[in-house]
Image (cartoon, rainbow, N blue to C red; front, side):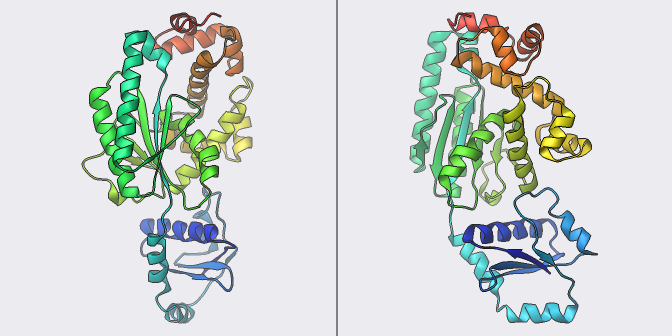
Length: 353
């Protein structure tokens, strides 16, 4: 029997959501769960060889850890189940009624690259048309547009998960066909809490920074708390599990804090994220398809691309600010990645360095 101390509704929802996630993986091992409001606790009954096997379930989950794990015999298990009066079905029904906002995120790579490829006038018209179409699709599914400080980012809020997924499918289908020159990614994110401002200020910016590392243009990225059964119409999706999601936000926070430091290395990374080198490599490869070194370089290049549009620093200074110790190495990596040198891109965008 596993006990979690839950002092508020958010903690209860987190504990229950985690149990249901484990239930979907280990159906026969997860027997039951119930909420005990008097003890401010959520209890699980799980079949396991020993306590160590239970603890391993939480190894990659940073938000939740059991307060107490106790061994119980079959008679006690039956007594617990009989005394709960079908609490599981009541609690599950309660969770289904409770709704949380679902955020639709559309990120476009960089307008300067598009201007370089097809010209300023054509790219400006294309991006404006795309923005209008995007707003129309969002409005048609009762989405609420949320202002973003970045013109490359589009964020909308939905109260219905089903409408959010249908809107995402329509956007992906129409935009892929009509705006094939524009490089973009789409994601749906939700979390079982009511702290909307916290999600918008902390979680979504990290997801936006990582979106191009997580899915292809023809894929919809879905966070762990979104009901995947709503996905239909042949939409290609990638759903993150709760472990991947927690690793993602931990990884994003570490990169955002340290990418500008050219001396930041793998041992520093392991220490910062509290993970062994082997496990860090394995988790990073599973999440992004890249090694941690490759991801660090890609993250720095994406950051330098944004810096080119935001300020008038020299190419040398931008390379330093992006974590490259050599300006020439930075320029070579940049050209290999984007097909144009940073100086050429700056000149094509009328930015003098």
